Length: 193
DNA sequence: GACCAGATTGTCT
DNA sequence: GACAATCTGGTCA
Image 1 (cartoon, rainbow, N blue to C red):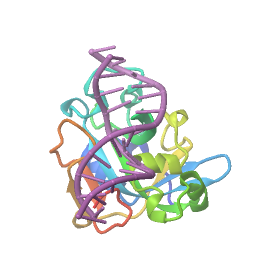
Image 2 (image 1 turned 30 degrees about the vertical axis):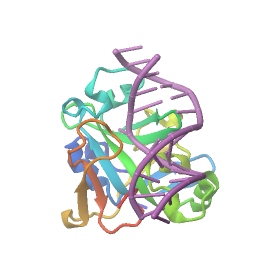
Image 3 (image 1 turned 120 degrees about the vertical axis):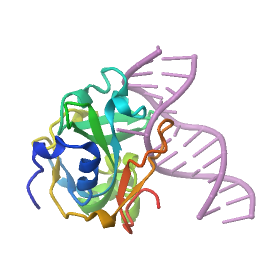
Image 4 (image 1 turned 90 degrees about the vertical axis):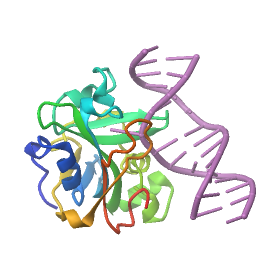
């Protein structure tokens, strides 16, 4: 396992960060065991210029983590049942974030199977709500630093632009047509083909 | 396989 | 009081 990514990594263009996070390792270091996998799908959310982004509007209790700066875990509840996991970025002190949509499970697989009550690896982390459940991520992890907190991101394989596909984002009602979703081509663990 | 409805709750207007 | 960066299980084919 490599070292946690430096905070400088997140202080860059959000789209660039979203692409480079592909192939990195997301690990939740719980008190009992380490759980995580390789990031295979992300989405960029671009602050004020992006109406689909939580921070497009003013700061609230819910989205304040996005305003803390780069390199924090931003966790929130969606549809009353699912959590979503993001990492904040900030090229120019802007409140932006990258949503982690899917992982390829590598560590703590038995734990994930118990959590998800699924046996197939493909069902463990192939979607934002699923991976938070599999990794036991909840609001307690909101606002933690991603280089020193329980949840950390480690450098991994670097993917070439050729191996990365861009597509429209999923599940949002505004700015749908922007190509801000990125995933590793031909990877089985993404949330959608 | 594709399409559709229901779950369920914190947060904002 | 409406809605949300989703998932699941049902139906129909």
